[in-house]
Length: 305
Image 1 (cartoon, rainbow, N blue to C red):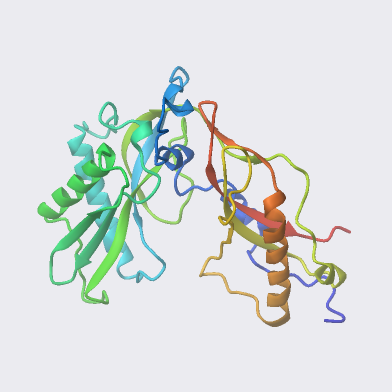
Image 2: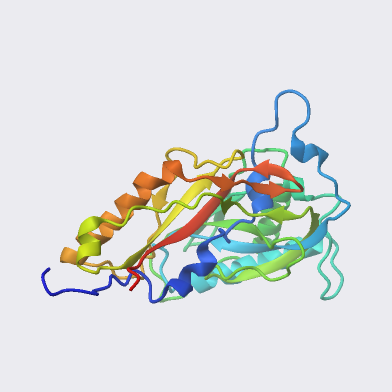
């Protein structure tokens, strides 16, 4: 590596490109928390949250699929999700272009943090559904399941084109909720279709409170190597990282560094993983109640001159 000063590992095109990753956009804070099991005795803090300062947020339907879903199939899944959104709006008695309110059938406390239903569509016809929610009394998940079947019964199921591979495809349908007072979702890279609104208490995201940083690997510093590492982790309601939840985030569309540069990247990654247990945060809050939150954050290693 001699003579390689100021070389850079391009983990992302720019650090700014991942600035939006700091707060996880896939499911908002409200949805993450309401899937937790209720306290066995008495009421939790969330049960006492005042709605005096509640703001409307928009709930969308979005396809949840793994990266192996072929690009030829993805548009057909999105069209089906759009049809399901229309059916669910009808179930909630929408009028014209106005989104119906979810209340009283669906409230912010009844939203789920994960994919409520799984779908398996078959080329030769027929679709099977699986309710994935751990809460069998979830009205929102049950209505999503009913809307999916209604869309299929209306002839708006998955349409298999001749160039679509495979005999079946598995995917999920998820609720994705905007932050209170904000209509638009953060860009998640996938189409999302608005369905209804719910009133939600104000939320704040977890934020770092300590000034420490991962150690810059000595060899990388010596040779002027810089880079960015993105990790995902869960911050608990006390402001500490939950052990075993930290993992690297890597977009399959990015090209991994090779050779010596891969070695330096791994040094950066291990430095972040070793430092993470000592990090402290102001926990996320819903209506003032401290709650866990899944966080995605970039760590930049750059030599200042």
